[in-house]
Image 1 (cartoon, one colour):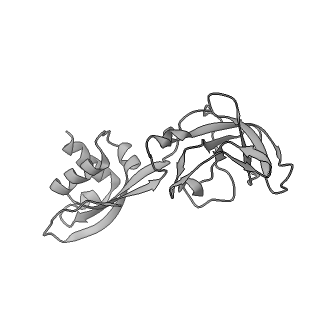
Image 2 (spheres, rainbow, N blue to C red; image 1 turned 90 degrees about the horizontal axis):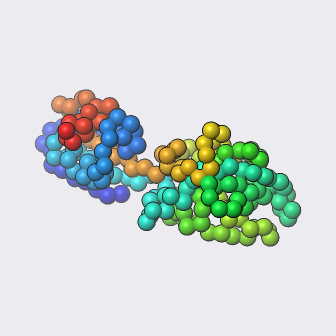
Image 3 (tube, rainbow, N blue to C red; image 1 turned 30 degrees about the vertical axis):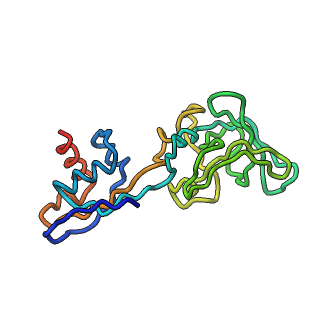
Length: 204
């Protein structure tokens, strides 16, 4: 986590966690999170630190996370607890994958990550062979993306989504948390909306 410190003589009211994606729902900004934090420290409140959450965008690898459409799925011939499938990811030939979840089938819309994508925890996805079957992409659960605790099955998305759509346009797969310490004389800054109003004022 990147610390962002300031000096205040006033007593703190409390600490709130602000997702950058929530902030953007109320106010548009293009500045880096660190600059937003610096301006808040100079004018309004303490930003104790910025904590990366979910998928890291390392050299554009966030673009490896896409919406996929499962075209066919059947039982893995060499593994009773796995299924093999093929899916469209928006361009090129359908990609094959092997999965241990059974809560989806042909026609399902899912989240996928292509080789080269970096998962939370700095694990890089690679093309592999599992029990004799090639797995070119990985399909994703909520817990793998740090969006929730459900690891019992694959995350099934809306059928209205087109294959190849960047997953970051659909879900907050990569985000930052600003840990903000509010001073006792600014109770309005104890809400996401209050912080958004402050950022909007700072950026005019």
